[in-house]
Image (cartoon, rainbow, N blue to C red):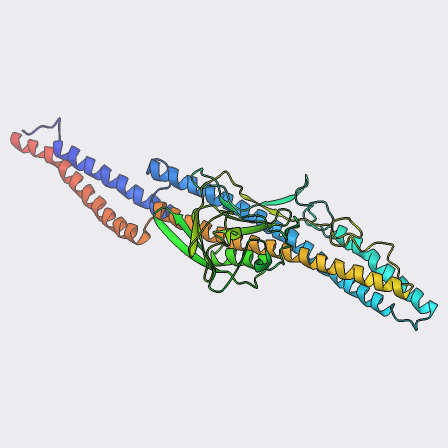
Length: 418
């Protein structure tokens, strides 16, 4: 039927042209933004996932900023500790020099004046070692105290299962005195480290399991072993040692299993794991259950000021007197004790700084991987969109021509009345 009231061909051509226009607008939007999903109306589900992951990337960035601040606090504390160590060495030199018996009273007085002047600088250095309001070496952030210094190490995302943690058993010398981080592993109670001993971590993430092997040497200090765990696992598993309890703990945001392989003796080195007794054979495995755990690293604070009981320089007091040979000998012994304790504490701080660096490196890689995943979800393939743009522009021109032809169709009715 031919009608001037209804031009069905023109309506079809117009619908086609409008559809081409909508597709062209969509392609232009993708080219302008570089995104195939730039708003919820493009793909609501994908947009929601991407926005959630963008929020996580932002939180990881904030955590890394916090870790940078924590690292700076530790670095300042280390610098102060090293400066105090240099002063202790000079005090040691003065005390040794004062042990000579051929010195005159004037010479001893000069040595005493130098000794006192050097000693009095220590508290000034400890109190000045502050960064962003935190000081790790003047007693204001002692671990376990109300103001202990902590740093976030993860955003806590992980399916709500919390951290996976495994605590070892207390290392002590039989009298209840825990070993320091500098103690050798084979000296710790319950351990018989031998040749070919190793600790193996299997980390499960979804359907993928990755295994890291950590060598255990009899000459390793506890701190050496702890550092090796974080390095070998690229920060995915961290180990820590609590000097107050003598316990080694392992932690990860991912599900992991740990296996101790004993190369020479029956598997009796339970202190490396969780203290299970009666284990036999050449290896034993402990599957780690999820727990509430913590997403914070407690940075150990110390007090490097003079004469503070229980701290590194407890033996260096104002009563030290090198004006006599016997007094100088006593001062030398006290300074030796202080140097040993100070170096132990500095080793702990250095290990914590390294743990922060390892964790920050991991978080940086994690953030990059998440951003790449977001890109896979929402980024447009601009090469493909460019080709599609050319095709739609041609299609639009052809659609306009088709609509023009369809609009001319009713004019044929005029020929019926000539």
